[in-house]
Length: 581
Ligand SMILES: NC(=O)NCCC(=O)O
Ligand SMILES: [Zn+2]
Ligand SMILES: [Zn+2]
Image 1 (tube, rainbow, N blue to C red):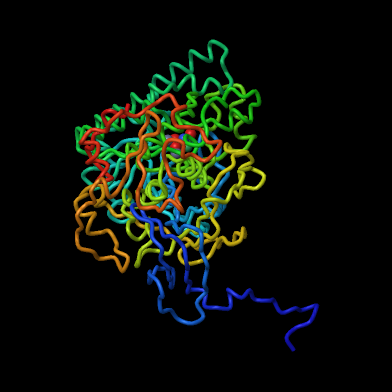
Image 2: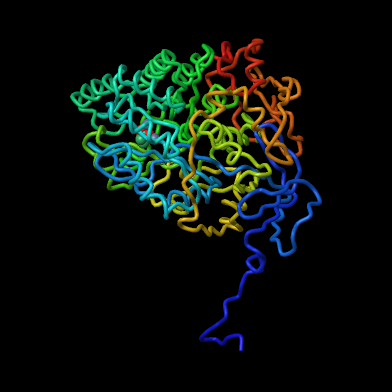
């Protein structure tokens, strides 16, 4: 007997009857950082095994029809803070809710930050984060390590972390009580360079912020509006510049986390023009919203938008930062997901300096970047892939295991419907936090399927994550993209497999078209047929969308020769951006 009403035999969904470790995704448009092409993708045991048409595959393989949709490499969020003790409280999204939400939005890997408590060694803090995360993560993850102090012990632990624990990035703060001074930054950068690691900076001028805050509080400005007033964008730009100058002294690659303003982005561009190995990350928050909301009368609402560096009041900032991503002035997007509920934000109800700093974004980053970038006509789908996935994989030495769809790579794939629309809301998001800075935003770009290491975790709106399914992934030192960029051509996977002979870079004309939008220039990949990619150009924007000219920034009338060559090679340590500003 098969079963009865009191003891029914569970009906097994058809797709689970086939072997769960084999999957064929058919009829999708594979998007890479520099191409879009029609190929099927066959996955076995979590790895992409074959790509092409008319593949010969074993019987019993589950088939997903991705017709009309893109296949994107799963997003890599290089900046999250799950289960983070900070400003007298703890962020509410932990490694389970955080990675679950990431997957719901099309992100299949995160990189979090180990933050040592007072008196705790870097190594003990690292072990503690591994304990917190392993067993909870629903997708793969890696760890950066923060340096809240500087000492010989810290220096030794950095070496151990790099040599024995798969860490290749260290974050230093130029603000907060735990900031390093310039001499300490110099020493920390020097150690990073020696180890083949990447130095990351939170760039703000801490001492000047403290003075500003003191003055504002004395004037009776105690509410959330004091946050941005105490941290104007020139203090961000000054610190970015200082960090770049110090890194240059010791030839250390520098990654500027959360670039939040036009002024700071300009400093990143200048450092890159000057030959510096400098990489800039901006946030979904900075691209999807701006700072006017900190004047909102409701404390929850304005405090909910408090992060550092702050959202900027200039409404042109989001488009400016997106254009910086388009032009490779900035290379990647993170979320800086660091979420606090109403009662936690209220720790600062009488004093804005005590509002726990942080916002959401891990779930919505992909949709926000698609909406404000691709749908708005500023970046192509290929550039979207670069700034949401591939560049993070390259900088942190995870490529080509992560960050691309290629034979031999991990099967972290998103079947992405660029035309479907969803409305972001705290009522429907998967995060633990009770607020969403993107509340009400309509986003084109919805993941139809999210495949994490070969496992289908999202389909038909149903999220089926597995707690503990993810693994810690080592980030080896001396990332070729950072330390030996000339080797990148050898690493680039072909459609048939990982090993390739070096290829000549494409000529500019083959790779991009330069289009004039009234008085502004936009770069767009020429690889997408117009049938799948919104054409960019004067009058070509879908109805109701803002023309780029409404922003207060504009690009130069002509890009100079150096700029063109820097665009051609995509990652131009030293490519010029003169004329952009
Ligand atoms: N960004 C922020 O306000 N909170 C998280 C900590 C940090 O990244 O500085
Ligand atoms: Zn920071
Ligand atoms: Zn952060």
